[in-house]
Length: 360
Image (cartoon, rainbow, N blue to C red; front, side, top):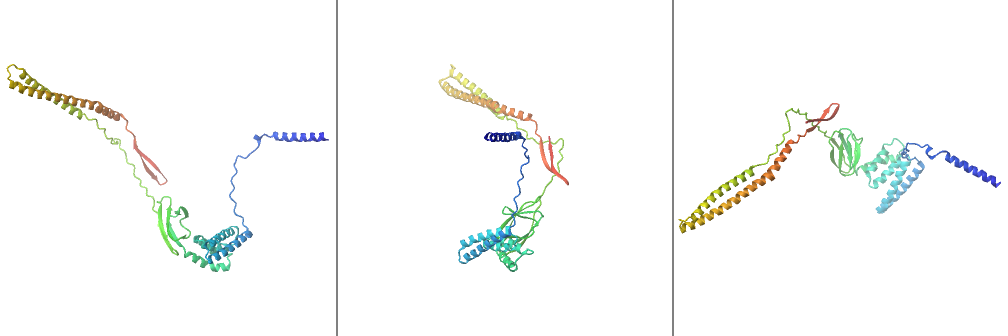
């Protein structure tokens, strides 16, 4: 009996193993398309749970009012926050329009008059379902909150202008209703395609109602007619100024002048030497000839040294200044002229672009 059970178990194991190997992993059919992430589901309405949240909000609001009367602002604010969260959840899960009335009251006490105005208006615009007692109070409550804020009706040209306040978009013109703003200065940024952006500062006072008309300026496009390029017209290229030979000429002239002077003074010194060695010269003549001849000799030496210095400067200027500059000029003149290209706007009734004008 045990042997038969063992055989059956082995056969079952063989069958399972064989089935597992019958289809390789590569043959498993899988979808190539990734799963599309599902959109977050809308909150499911649950009137019973919504009513519980509304009751929690009402109790928290009553406790907050009690703390406020006893001059305990911290405790009052904490319970108003609880009431705000509870009423918000009740409005999300339920369909009772009256919850927004109580929510607006809590928002007003928490210093959020703009949210309160939005929810009071929601109750006033409801076609049905408003409790008669709330219907009698909502208008007065709304007026009370409106006295703490201001409204601005913006009429903006052109339509489709994006209105931004504090980095957040508040609407697109034409705006359906006036903007509700806290007292103070507000800077609006207005942008529209084809128009210049504009910043506008509006000061709002509590309880004020104002209107502003704003018109954006269109972007001006200046289109210049392409200028006809004449065949002989070319870009004016500043000619490279050639290296100057003037220092060479000056140094050469000075060198020649000094050489000439040295020759004259040398001959004069030689004449005085002849007088000094002449047999018929007196002692006085020899003495004068010696002094004068010595001066001429010294002057000759100075002229020769000066002549060599001037010639050396001229040679330096020619080798190290003139020739390199002359070579650079020749290379610059051999370079081909670069093309000049100018892009100008090109606009037609049905298209636009750029035109390219230039010389090549």
